[in-house]
Structures are given as structure tokens and as C-alpha cells.
Image (cartoon, rainbow, N blue to C red; front, side):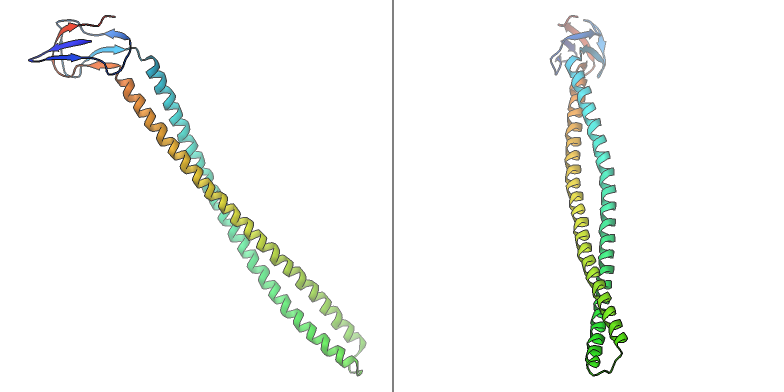
Length: 212
């Protein structure tokens, strides 16, 4: 593109292919190191840079959204497990209490039935014992069913934690995409910067081979 003369001849040429849009020096001009000599039309390089920049921005937004959703789901899943486990513990305690009451009322009923055979207890007392035994047996069956239901609720809450693990994997994939897009953007920035041709050192333009 241009030649700079000092004590040595230096050929300056672009690092990317393109059409020269501006020539800022002519033969005989003195230049300083780093001075802008010419500019190539950015064309596809600028378009690539904009595309990768938008892609990187979209990936960054996706990472932020995934992080926010993950934090929410983690908190919600942990609370669901905690609540389900607390409900299960309460149900187990109630079932244990009902079991003890059922055993006790069954003993009373057995004793009353034995006494009824010898006329040692009033019929009303025997009926009351039978009613009490039936009520507490039904209560124990209900509390046992509640224990089974709460076991299922704990399993369901723990399954939600598995979903959180999958979200972590998705977040990692989004981060990988963000890093890849950022790397592509940096490369595009570098290539776009190559459209500016600068003097590598101070000197005088000897031959300007390019024309606009």
C-alpha cells in the first residue's frame, strides 16, 4: 500500500483484504509511528462485528435470566422439600399417637367384652368401648394414609430439586455460549481494527502504490 523510508525500507500493507476507502498520505509526507495512513472499507468486517456483538449481548442477557430463574427455583424447591419433610414428620407423629390410642382402646374393649360375659359390666359401657375403638381405628387408618401421602409429597419436592440440577446444566451451557460469543466478538473487533492502516515507525512516504 505505502512505503516508509528511514534508514531502512519498510513495506506497509493491510492485514485483511479490502477496498481502500481513504488515503491520508502521499509520497514525500513525513509520518510518525502509529499515524493513520489509510482506511479500508469495513464492509463485511463491520457487519460481522455487529452480528457477533449482538449475539454476545443476547447470550449475556440469557445468562442473567437463567441465573435469576435458577435462584428462584432453588429457593422454592428447598422450601418445598423443607415443608414436605415437616409435614411428613407431623403425620408420622400423629400416626404413632393414633396407633398407641388404638392399641389402648382395643385392650379396654377386650377387657370389657370379657367382663360382659359374666355380667360384670353394663351394656352401655361395652357399647361406648366399642364405639371408641371404632373411632380411633378409623382415625389411625386416616393418619396412616396421610403418612403415605406425605411420603409422596416429599418425593415430588425432591423431584423438583432434580429440575434445579437440570437448570444448572442449562445455565452452564448458556455461559459457554456467552464466552464463545464474546471470543468471536473480540476477534471481529481485531479484524475490524485491521481496516485502519498505520505507520509502524516514523519516516517518509517513498512510494504510494495504492490509489483511491
